[in-house]
Amino acid sequence: MFPRPIEHAPRSWQLTYQAMLPAALILWLLPLLAVAVFSVKPDADFTTGNYWGVPSSFNFVENYGKVFFASDMPRYLLNSVLITVPTMIGCVVLSSMTGFALGVYKFRANLWVFFMFVAGNFVPFQILMVPVRDLTLDLGLYNTKTGLVLFHVAFQTGFCTLFMRNFIRALPFELIEAARVEGVAEWRIFWFVVLPLMKPALAAMAVLIFTFIWNDFFWAVVLTQGAESQPVTAGITSFNAQYRAAYHLMSAGSIVAALPPVAMFFLMQKHFIAGLTLGAVK
Amino acid sequence: MPSSNKAATRSSWYKRNEIAVTPWLFLLPGVAFFLLYVIFPIFQSINVSFYDWDGLGEAEWIGFGNYEELYWDDAFYVSLRNNLIWLVMYLLAIPAGLFIALFLNQTVTGIRLYKSLFFFPFVISQVVVGLVFTWFYDPTFGLLNEFIGLFGLGPINVLGDERYVTYGIIAAGIWPQTAYCMILYLTGLNAVDPEQIEAARLDGAKGARLLWHVIIPQLKPATFIAFVVTIIGALRSFDLISIMTNGGPFGESRVLSFYMFEVALSEYGFRMGYGASIAVVLFLIMLCFITYFLYSMYQDDKGGR
Image (tube, rainbow over all chains, first blue to last red; front, top):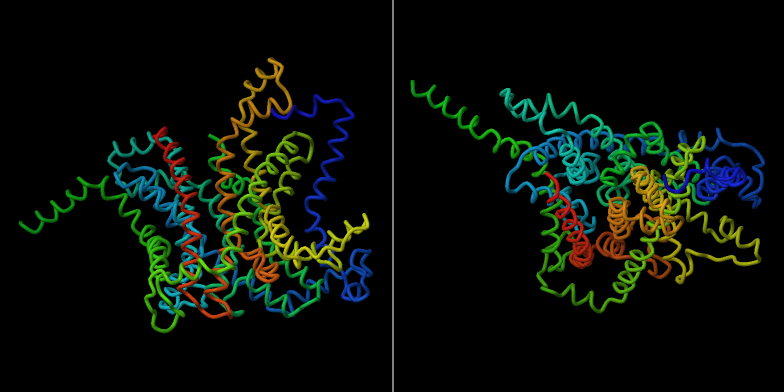
C-alpha cells in the first residue's frame, strides 16, 4: 500500500493524522457549510449584519417551509423528476442494446460505430444547440419535458454505450458461445444470458445518468422556459429572483435543489463509484 | 406448396445470417437517435455558420462572412484567451486530486465516510456550486473576505474585478473536478501492485522517489481518464459563468461556450449564424482532443479481444 499505512507510524504521527482529517474536511467543505448555516438563519440576522455570528434563532422549519410551500420549488423538483427518470429508463434500454451489439459481435463497422458514439459524447454542447433547438421547435416540443427527455436520451446514449460495451467485453465470452452451440436464438442470448449479468452495470449507469441529468443546466435553459417545464437547476434562478437578497431562503433553496443527487450518491455509493471509475484500473 | 417454401427460405435466410443481422437490429434505435440528435446537428451547425440568420426569417448565404467578423471581434479573443486559461488551470485538479487521494489512502476508522464527504462536491450541480461560491466571494459578507480581513487585507470583489474574475470562477470549477480526480486515484491506488512497492522499498526507495518511479506509472489508466474528463470539463464550462457573473464584468469572464450562447440566444439578438461560427471554432479545438482520445483508445483496443 502507498503511502505507508499509518498503523506502522509512530503514535504521535497517528494522532496528528486523526486530528488533521476532520480539520481538512471542514476546510474542504467550508463554502458549503457556510450555505448550510445561512439556510437556518432568520431574516433579521441579515438586516442587522450578523452574517457569521451565532444565529439569533434557529429557523430551519420556517425557511425550508417557505421553500416548499410559498414558491414554485416543488413544481421545479417534480419537473426534474419527470425529466430525469424517463431519461434514465430510455438510456438503459437503448444502451444495453447498443452495448450488446458492439460488445459481442465482430463486424467490420463495429469500431467505427463505437467511435461515433464516443466522439459524439465529447462534442461541445454549443455545436448542437442551434439545430437541436430547431428540431425541438419543429416537433412542437419546445418548452416541454418530452423535448428535453428525447435530447437527453439521445445524447447520453453515447456515454452509456461506451460504458456498456466495455462492461460486456469483460464478461466471459464462453457463456455466449455455449448458448450458441445449444442453438439459442441471438435475442434470447441477449435477454437470458447477457442482461442478467449486466445488472451491476445497469445500476451504476442509472445512478450516473440520474446525477448528470438532474444537474444539467445548459439544455434546460436552451429548450425550456417557465415553471411548467423547467427543471430545478434552471428554476433556481427564477426562485432567486423572487427572493432577491433573502440569503436565508436562497440558501435553503439551493440545498433543496442539490439534495436528490446527493441522496442518490449516498444510497448507491458502491455503484456510483464503480461507474465513475470504470477504466481507471486495468 | 410454393408459399410455404418461400417462408422456409425466408426464415432460413434469417437463420443463416442471424449473427450478421442481429447486431444491426440491436443498434438501430440507438444509432438512429444518436444520428438525429448529435451527429447530424454537427453538420447542420457547420452549415448554419455560413449564413446570416436570426432563427426565424430567411437565411442569407454569406460564405465566410461570420468567420471574417469573428476575426475582428475583440470579445472573441477575450473568450479564446479565457478558454486557454481554463484549460491550463483546470489541469491543476489532477495533481490536487492525487494529493488528496494519497492523504486519504489509509485504513483508519471512519475513513470511508471521509472519502465520501471529500467526494461530495462532485455530486452537487454546478449551478449550486456557482451560487455557493458567489456568496463565498461576496465583498460584504463572503467568508473569503472575512478570512483575509483577519490579516488586515481586502475586501476583494473577486467577481467584480476583471483581473480576478476568471480565476475566481475556475477555482469554483476545480473544487468538484478535484473530487472526481481524487476518486479516480483512490480506485487506482487500490489496485497498485503491493509486491512492486515492497520490492522498491527493499531497494531503499521511499517518499517522492517511490511515488514518481513506481506508483505514478501504475496509475496511468486513472491519469488518462482524469485527463480526458478534465479537458472536456474545462471546455464545457458554461454553468458556472452563467450563474456567477453572466460573462461580466464587461464580458471579461466569457469563454467561447458562453459567448456563443449569448450571441445566439440572448437579448442582444438571435444571431444563429454568428453563434454557429463560434461553436465551430470551439468544436475544432475539441476535435484535436477527441482525435487524441480516440487514438489512445484505439491503441488500447488493439491489445484486447
